[in-house]
Amino acid sequence: MSAGSAAARQPRGRPHLRLVRPEDVAPTRRVAGRRTAREVAARRTTVLLLGSTTFLVVAGLVMVLSASSVSASTRFGDPFRYFQRQALYALVGVGALALTSRIRYRAWRRLCVPMLGITVALLLAVLHPGAGVAAYGSSRWLSFGPVTIQPSELAKLALVAFAATVLARKWGRLDQVGHLAIPLLPVLLVVGGLVMLQPDLGTTVILAGSIFVMLFAAGVRLRYLAVSALAGIVIGFGLIFSADYRRVRFLSFLDPWGDATNTGYQLVQSLIALGSGGWWGVGLGASRQKWLYVPNAHTDFIFSILGEELGLIGEATVLLAFATLVLAGVRVAARAPDVFGRLLAAGITGWFGLQTLVNLGAVTGLLPITGVPLPFLSYGGSALVVSLAAVGVLWSIARAGADPRTVAVRRGGGGR
Image (cartoon, rainbow, N blue to C red; front, side, top):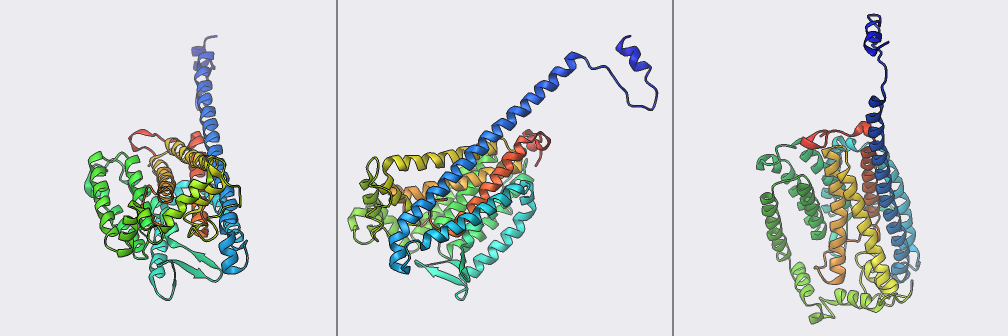
């Protein structure tokens, strides 16, 4: 009996049945193969993402213990003070990573505005003399009993999520200046302005740079990007020369040895630490520069102590871990199931990469000192917890990109 006659005898009102031929099965097998390959690629990306993050967090705990032991003993009489707090923050950060990895990443489209509002309120509270905690000439922290938070760290994730939401909604209209600038530019100016009032030029640069990376990832016209970059450079130099301490810090970066005992002291001591490490370092815990020679040895300049104790090999290993993290983030963005996921992953990855470059540039004398910590390694609870939460968001996007049911059309702005 032919397939046509069999179909003709099917009773009316019942589902139509047809014979399955071998040529009908082959395409299904190929689709299944593609899905399996997508899942395997996502699993490899997840391994790179979580593996590099785990390595950096563990390395950070080890180096915080080593770099902070002398200053903690001098200040608190307990060499483990900073390490214990950082370990506690790491546990909280792992919990935040687990939480954000289970939240569907599209939920950040709804959460970004409330989170941004809370961030702005906290940034305003930091500037209040009775609420903000000042240190090193800046008011960047809020104290809640034994817990101290830094709202500018939360601002990084909130602003990236908000920018991804705005750009995804305006997808297809980004060639129009009005749609491109409103409301993204006013929000960036408000958040960046509040951070600058602390003052914190380094974090402001990270915020603006992360948005620039997202605009590039969104395919904004190059002339718009060029104008934005030029405007940013002009504003940056204006901010540098608007304050005496920033101007002195910038000029000392050009020739730190010209005033090695004053304005260039921190950079000179950092270079001495890096140069003392050689190939293999002086040994873990055996740093001489951490004996109060390098200021902020366990925060902004922890890479200097790492280079002294673990040498060029240790530095290269850490740099490889950061490169792996950025590569994983790029792969997550490339395989994201929609425009919003792609831009959100690009913003987080750009934030990590840019902050790493700014910190390492300051430590090695290639860039001015801005007070930006090294992600995952430097001491700081807010930075570590928020960064790990951002890694959880990347993991959520990677998992969604591996699920065929969530993959939308990638071209033409599908799945915004």
